[in-house]
Length: 110
Image (cartoon, rainbow, N blue to C red; front, side, top):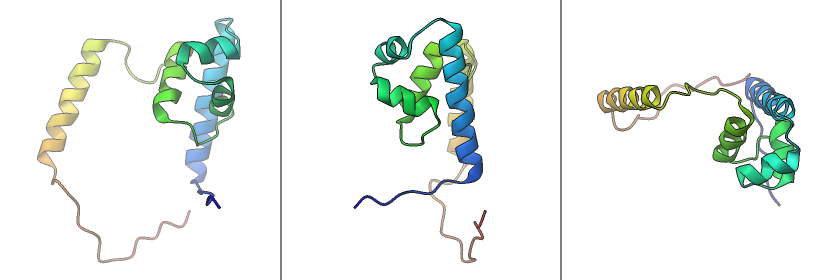
């Protein structure tokens, strides 16, 4: 039996907001759900789940649907994206390669 994963309230709200933005963008562009799903290379059911904020969709599929619907996730300028990606690569090089487990118990009760 598949175990149901729980998500933080903020995660569920963010998924709901992104799904609604995708649906609004799709509708403002006069696209049917089937048209957007076809362009994104996903099923209509997967798009429906994305638009209602279900957490199970692959992030690449969600970003593709958002991009096609005109939802701005990051800067549209490719040069700016490359610069940001390089900046993050430099930052990652300065951080340790791994993080040791904390000796104190983390309180993650939301």
